[in-house]
Amino acid sequence: MRQDMRVITDAVKLGTDAAMAVVTKLLLRLTR
Image 1: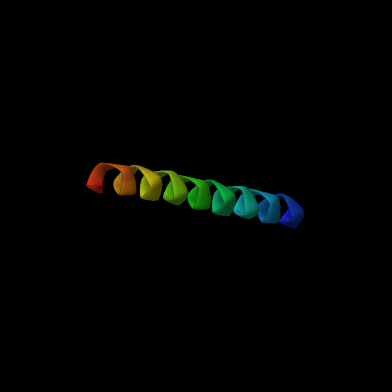
Image 2: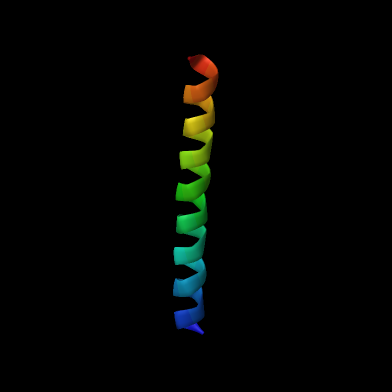
């Protein structure tokens, strides 16, 4: 059970990092 929570947490972190990267790219593209 605890292992599942760790996997879910890692997945959420990866998803958040990916989303932030995409948003940053879009913002940079819009501001240029």
